[in-house]
Length: 141
Image (cartoon, rainbow, N blue to C red):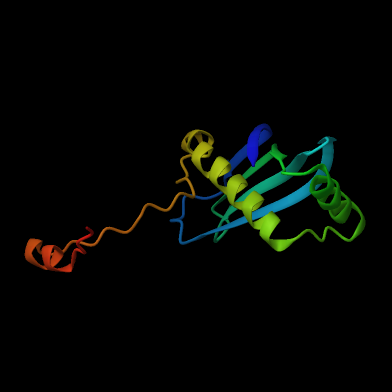
């Protein structure tokens, strides 16, 4: 369970006033260290590249994860540091999603300064006629 973290560096640049067509998000884990019996320190670099060389956001940080067992924490740290950064997919998936959430919700401030839109995708809203929506609703008892 991710229980904390912090940023070390935030760098935002705008190279062009061209419209943004798309963004590419990359999350690179740079270190996984055992810091307590069942706790890991996970360093990362979160990068958002705005296509057509419009701009870039880079956030360097760390998150702390508390696992259920000391053995699992030790196994993950060793796997990352000795087996060419091979860590169980289900574990990394949760970590990367947490990092993506943390960085994307904190990105509007530095991006506002350089006048770039944050990489947060709002949900798509579909408008339907009231009668259609009422007919499609499920009733739970």
